[in-house]
Amino acid sequence: MALEKFPVLAPGHILRKIESYFVYDIRRDELYELDEEAFNFLRKCDGRNSFSDLSVNDETNETIRSMLDEGIILIKDGDNFREIKIPHSPLPSLRYLLLNITDKCNLACRHCYFGNKENSEMDNEIFENTVSQFEAMGGLKIMISGGEPLLHSGFWEFMEILPSYELRVVVLSNGTLIDKKAARKLSRYVHEVQVSIDGIHSHDLLRGKGSYARSMKGISNLIESGVPVSIATMIHRFNVNEFQEMEKLFSGSGTISWSVDVPCVTGALAENKEFVLDVNEAAKYLKYGFGAGSHESTGDYTCGSHICAISPDGSVSKCGFFRDETYGNSNDLYSAWEELCRKTLFTLDQLDCHDCTMIRDCKGGCRFRAKQFRGIRAPDPLMCHANGILRYI
Image 1 (cartoon, rainbow, N blue to C red):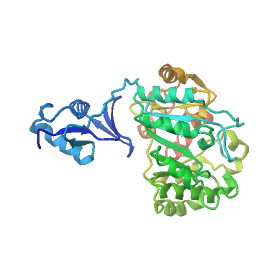
Image 2: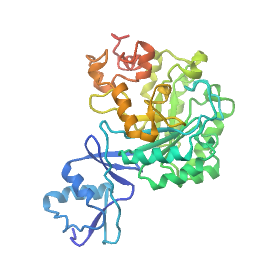
Image 3: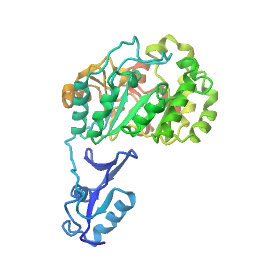
Image 4: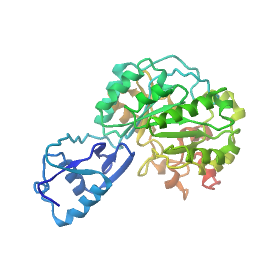
């Protein structure tokens, strides 16, 4: 390896010192854990230090070759500089942010967890201040949602702001408004668009006549424009016979992942219970899906150790289901996150099912579903059925 060459942390890669040392590949949504030596080597890979400056020896050459193979570092001639930020992260780290920028939606889905929808929108100051603080706290991924985020009157202005930050940007959409022009514009700003598809023949029952065709057209437009697309599906009573068909369709459509979940009975779904499938039946369909990234908790924590949600007015909550339980405002995101964790984040030994053999695999499941079942520290009955652990049911 020529010592006059300069190693540079590759574009789209960022360093994070959170619970441990990591390099995050923004484009591929992959988090690589590092030892301290590798982390300290990478933080100096800003294009200003040659291999000889970094005292590279035979012992570290193998690690460097591995990083080169993975595309984590590149070798340059010394004229490609980049600033490498090492943000100060709280513990537990806030890695993922669900930013609900508007309550507006062009559909009236029968399973939407929102109750009465308003026409509220997040203003530019809240948006940029929140994103800036999130990056400064060591954040990795921002998920822009609503309502339908494309209905925000300043949506494209928000998109213009985001390239200034080293974050993965995902837009969560119903897909019906994404024509060819919108898809081309999104390709300049986002790393992924997640579109909700809740069945093939039954999708329109849930989301309205013609919505399936418009959503699938939106997906087609995105893929044609080079935007990575993921699909999210909610299990309901009328789509359970369509999962094999959906699996075949989605796996051959060019989508990067397919996530499957069960909606909580709240909001509009509480008024449309004919769509609700018993959790013991719904659990059978969690086996479907592929390649989906997750926002799982780490260590001894229950659900939500690395994620929170922001409402259009800047209120901070555990997730969209707990929207009415707020813990500060995003004008001081660090303090709000600390307060949220202090009051709502449990360790596994604090749960009623702490002695379950599957506790470290499921982390107790969804806290909102548990709260609806028997209380905030109860087990999530869906995960109990999925894991065949029925003594808590």
